[in-house]
Image (cartoon, rainbow over all chains, first blue to last red; front, side, top):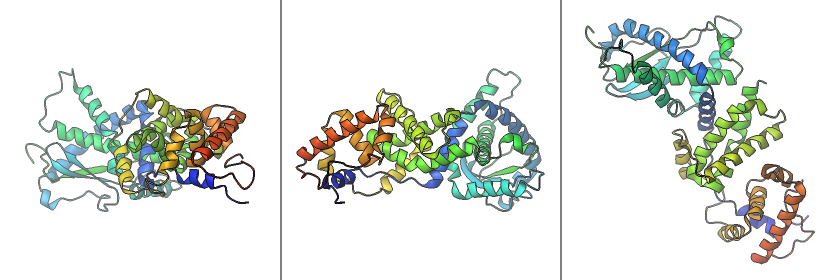
Length: 205
Length: 173
């Protein structure tokens, strides 16, 4: 059948449009999903903040020798890294360990999903929309609490917490999107570590 | 497949077309934000996601149309993540070139808005008339009538000869 020239003209009149990168689309989908799940976020954040506080004590000893920085076991391989700029500590690198699900049937699959996500995603861009909200929650949690002493490191510690939590939430969203909801990952363990160019962990280090 | 996985898939598969749809109506700068908003609403309503893939695709297009309506009412939200899409929009474009079809676009823009939109949905967004009608929330017969009227006007405006066969056009399936 002969083509109607009008159809051809109309088809060709479509304005040019952008072709987004798949990784950016994926990140946007995950960030959008996180927007809809505030209750879960709050619960996990409390747990994570406690874990970070413990790590801060344990990790302080190696923080002084920044030029000879050692990554803790499981973090030597920089496949799961994330960079951000801290308020006073400058450029920081976060590394995330493999997850240990304590289940031989799921462990490889869970870590493959996370590895694929880190490899295909602009993680910094994906986390960016989440960080301000987490920082706001951290500040609010301290506001009006007379027991909280002012800490000169607070802004940098908050940045550390917020960026770590943002990535953690995105990873869990990716796992959930692939069939591993939080309920299926009960008891799963992992850890992360930060190193900043100008980090200052305070007295005694 | 879980509901989350199904929604992730339909958003991934539709995102480029959704961005084009939004960009052609709200402009490239706002389109990225509107795409983000569309995704948030889709997640919020994920329990309504249809099982059938084509129905699911039209479902997210319907949400995108709603975000456009809110945008027209002045509601807007900026997404930091959308900055990357905005930047990409300046670097990579699908064909055709921006100045191609200017005369045709002007002719479409001069149509009654209801007629213009049906033409854009069929020829720019590649929807069938049935799907275009569904997206607009009008009966298929109304969509067919608008489309035929729009073609008649455009043919005269652009001085294009009659079709070799019947005035059929695209997308009556």
